[in-house]
Image (cartoon, rainbow, N blue to C red; front, side, top):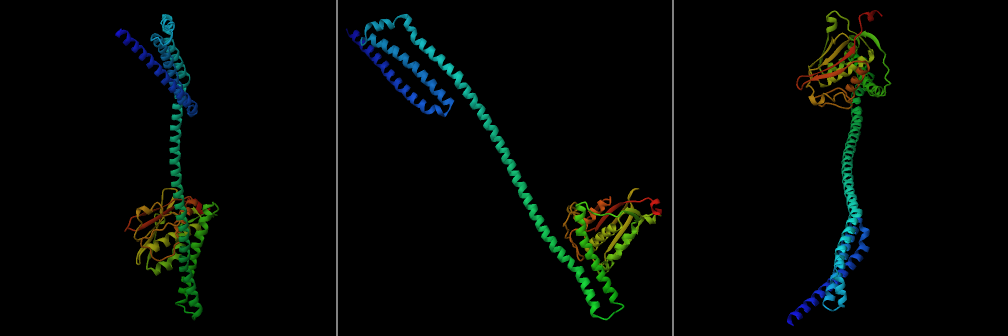
Length: 396
């Protein structure tokens, strides 16, 4: 009797446990259904996960309903025939079929939605990584562009400052020859003619006028050469002739600083002809600029040497050597640039920072080359070459 009562209580408890599970799973499935309707818009992966969990919960619910009905009928709460029916071996397979059907549906959902969605997500992540790298590269390009823009801004600012400095230099340096001209002419005008003083004053005035004209011509001709509009009057002549004219032009300035100018013609010393094919006036101006530069940096009682020598069979080399302080090596590459000046002990003599630029461009227009050799403390040598003319051209 006691065993029967205990078995009956166990049956009731087991049946009650299954029905409690059934209520719990119904509550869970209701919750998942509501969340699916709210969250499936967030993406395929989330909605697929909710569907899989819902199917697995439905499978468990059906299995609990089957066994809950079975044990409830066994406990006598439901009709006995239901227990006998559910215990039929054919119906015992129903929970297994539920599990199999649910597993197949879950596999289908995973294959058709989950895996494609995951693959699409991985592709999206790779695309995002690629776009992020491109964004980083674009950011680096923007940084470089910003750096280039800053550099261009600095160059523009430097060019503006150079232009302002050029204006100041031109006004300041042109004042020196203008003062010589005005002072000499005023002195001649206000005093009686003196055969000793007047010619010297007029010579200084003319020298100042020539230097002023040289600077103005440099400014104008550099613009013409940059635009390819420089007129060149090519002829054959002894290069010593324009050199002699240039020496005479700067002689007064050299005397004022007690500087001696020496000329060495190695071509004629060897019995040759110093004939070149060039523009006589341009050559004179090149030599005047180089001599003016040498006078500017040569200290008083110094020496400037002009040398003419052959440079191979097809060129003649003209060099101007001074005994000044020399040029630091870091300036050699830029000394022929516009407005570039080396403040290294220069004194006296006008300069706009364009004389060497004119020399370089003019020599290249004439088909030659130009350069500098210098060491600090050992003076400087500026040289340039011109196309040599054959001896037969002298007769022509």
